[in-house]
Length: 107
Image (tube, rainbow, N blue to C red; front, side, top):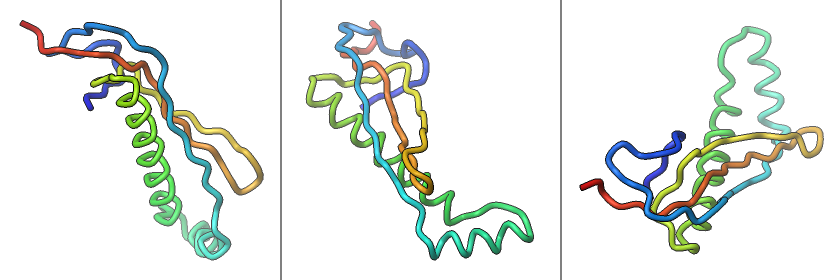
């Protein structure tokens, strides 16, 4: 599956625009990781426990978006975007969305 944040591909032309596709996941923080993260805030720097959690959430959201696009017959996604929103204290949704398209190599 080809994907881009742009509205077109350099080496491919869009044959058909299929429509909106999305994938999401909701993740909650883990109390053990919160304790470690709290300690890390004392000395500063990256909090790798949260970095890993968010990376996994993005990957899962993208995978779900790709599955939806493939089920619609698409082989590309343009204008890919991410957004997050708080659901409850300590949990958040990560949403990946874009436009599913059928593409072919430019002649």
